[in-house]
Length: 110
Image: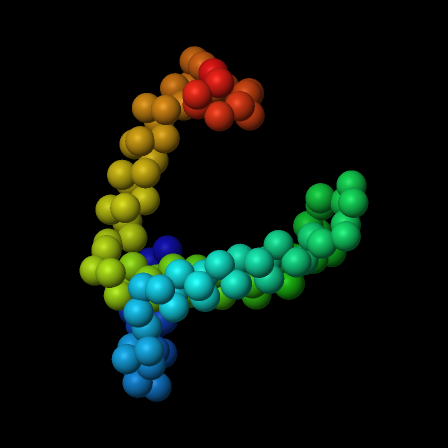
C-alpha cells in the first residue's frame, strides 16, 4: 500500500470531520464488522471456496477492512509498514521454513 493511498483515506476522513468519532474501540469494532461482511461472501458456500465469481464483493469488503485498519493505525499512532515488518519478523521466527514449509499446523505443533 502506498503512502498516497493512506493519505487519501485520511484526507477522506478529515474532509468530513470524522476523526472526532474514531477511537480505538469503535474502529476495532468496525474492522470486525467489515471482516464479518467479507466472511459473509462465503457463507453457505459448502465446498465452494473459490473466489472468481465473488471477486467484486470481496474487493469491496476487503477495501472496507483495509480502510478501517488505516484509520486504526493512524488513531493509535502506528506506522503500518513498521508493524507489518515486525509481525513478519516474529512469524519468521515462529515458522522457520525448514519446519513450516508445506504444513498448516500452528507453530506450537511443528
